Image (tube, rainbow, N blue to C red; front, side, top):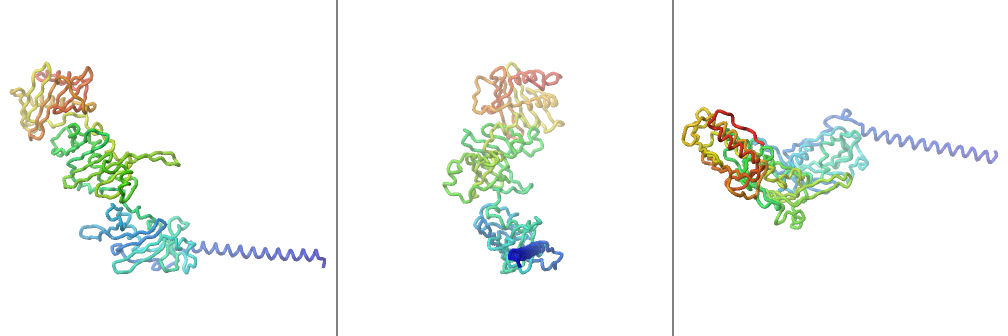
Length: 500
């Protein structure tokens, strides 16, 4: 046969052989891929449910948990046993961080989800390559230790393609399971993630202590802001104010309920955005402005004899490199908790609060029938000296300058006085000259005796002092309206209720 023909036949045979080899390899690869897909799709319906039970213990019997993952190794320890009588569940904390507030709900999942674990399905029995499922030596590992001395060790692998499960293996067993991701995902967390971002846990709604005093000290203020519990705050006859506290420094003032409540009780349950440093050294405290002289200090004194102190460091501003969005926070430390937290600036209200932010616009709020004596003097007007008996409009008896007066007329006049409205604070200002009007009153229970004086500063502005201390400003036209209403008292005309 011609050599060229022989060569062509030989080439055809070679090509045919190669093609056959390619077909064999392709079929083998397809078979391998098909096998892999078959392994993954093997469901619980193909398995005896009893074979899916991996651990049959209870969380109450877990004494400790060892965790090892890409972030490092740590141990979760039981901090309190369950108490049926008290209705409390078993709790866990991170070993070495026992004195740092812990997210007990999160740490408890490590025991609750695994102690009595069942798989979703069996993926593959007699697996010879655990690495394929992320279950090799680099896998996240956990070991639960129980009170009876037994233990349950396992590995958490890659995500299954269904998006709802992860591969899972019991240590020492070559069976690969699919287990709900929600049950085992926390074993891939770092130790610090189990610490709470809440420095001071909020009590139950009906167990909040009364805050007797809330004091704010700051480097940028020459005075302290001190809020005091009003002893008659829950008395239904307080009439003028729903706020439970009043300001006693730097000025005496009633408080705005909306603007003061979070300042007074906000330390309870306040959440940080992150933990900056656990067990900070002296250099760390200096870095965050929390050493000997912090930027600010908040002291909350409660009626349960507990006092909480929050130190506030210098403000930090961070800019996200990808988005360019800036955010700010204050490093803070709660005394008794050895960690520095970052509290976002919009939540750290004490760092920027001013008396004006907290004070109510009302200068006088005492309930009309709580007053035993009220006197009013104004330039060019006859002095008005009221005495009041009785505790409601049905039994009230009023005298004016020693003579009987109509109690309803007095009530309406006092309603006008209640409208004395501050339009700003006047901290540190000194009054000049003599006051144009002075109001004095004292309460029946003897707890409050106060002098409110009005100084006309110019055609538009009036300075108000309380017990000689400059506190507020209002419109000068209020003094003119006050004088007119004093004239109207002995008439049947309506009192003037507005001024400009």
